[in-house]
Length: 272
Length: 122
Image (cartoon, rainbow over all chains, first blue to last red; front, top):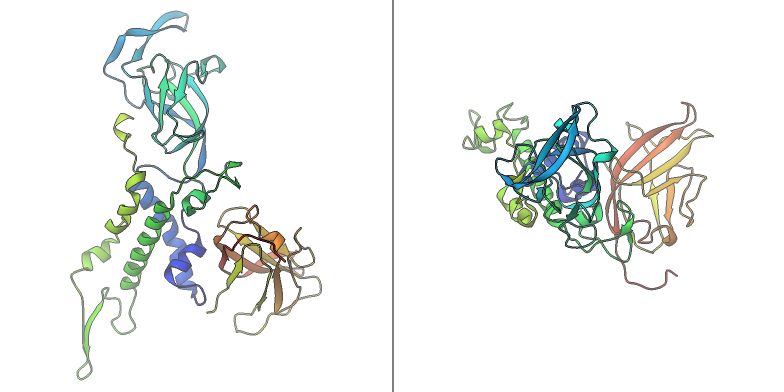
């Protein structure tokens, strides 16, 4: 998770005194915040390995290149596999930290056809493809270039890679003088703490919404801020303007948090 | 309901007192073969520091088998190579010898490691 339970408690001022309902609320909110941040960025920013790989392209490229391609054999027949019009492959998750392997099979069918993506389909780094790197082990754009061109057939490319920001990078504490335990390499100088800041701001806003929905001992189950109450012939009123928003419990990243995510948005989604 | 909140300092030794209570607020009693266990790290991750009474960490950090117990965090176990400054989950519990040595959490709180100036640790 982007935020740990301890960080959430610190942000909410619940370090020395916390109730079980508050613990339960935090636990429930932390995973939803991850989902909200992922939705906003259009990718999960946490460091991990895409071990089973991802298939590309998702849709057939409509414009083929200048008749460039390669002859392949499928089912005993020769087939000319055209390269697409672009030599750029846009990976979904950012940033790309390392690519384990790329397999290209124009008959790949997203791995659902028998006998596809065998060892003979492995492309070599430097010879067949290369990444757009800002630093060793850092590809911010997620773009991979083919020496020739990528095939136009959907599901014909399988990429296994690691991506995302490590916990140290999300803390803004990555340092080249120590080994990052997640990558087992010297720490980068990347500061991705804006993502964590956005998560904290989203958490605080969500919790205030939760609390406003809570059953009030005085006002029963009526949600909303207590606007006024009287003593003689007791009466109360609640702020009704926020009722729909509270009932909908919209879990979006608030505008003040989006500001901290500006540099992390996935700008290449349209190329997928 | 009180919670655990411990502040320690990078490369510095500190001592902390923790009391484990029952739900009625009375101090929990430990059986002869019980052990106290303290884990410091992040949710769903392998702990960065995992201290069990009777089994000190390589740097000498320990927790006593008593209630209240003493948790001593030694500088050699708080180097940047082991744990970076920041905020972590801390979990304290009892290994119950009368129940198949099951680890029963007493509480989970906040552990903050503060960065310090460079220099010797003694």
